Length: 202
Image 1 (cartoon, rainbow, N blue to C red):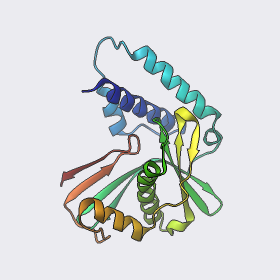
Image 2 (cartoon, one colour; image 1 turned 135 degrees about the horizontal axis):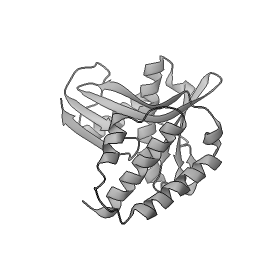
Image 3 (cartoon, rainbow, N blue to C red; image 1 turned 30 degrees about the horizontal axis):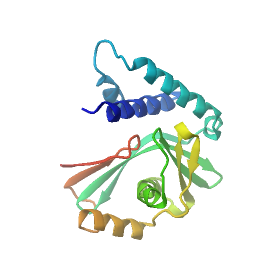
Image 4 (cartoon, rainbow, N blue to C red; image 1 turned 60 degrees about the vertical axis):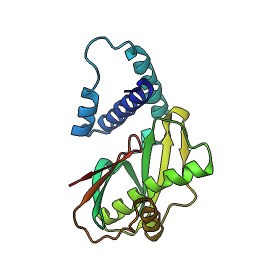
């Protein structure tokens, strides 16, 4: 296993676990399992990782998000996409009047160009649609943003795909345009901590 990707994933997991605990919720089983994957014995990178985590925590404490109370933290919503189920794991949701804002914490680098941002906003589009269905509200009442903690940078894409645009993009990527008819088949998991997507047959 490559060292840098593993360390980056571990750091992201630890940060998400810390934020979850900070807001008074329990760490998920998945988070605890991920942390338990650390190699037993002396971790020569432990000091550096602890210092980096402390830097991320300090940056977060200075951010606008630290003084606000989210209405939901680390929630998992299953959205049927035709013969698939997309599992959206949303980091935090804040409310402002009758509007909501989904925030996805990122410990990696911010998008370097418009193409990169366009790809990343698909994740926010999925989260927005999932949360709208879960709350039984329209997606246009939900805003969404990335917070790249290491750079203390908030990015709110100018455009987040609508449901029809999301279906079209999904269809191009998997070969079949999604519908929300439920059903079983391939399970697709979108991981908020790493932005990765995995599939398995259920």
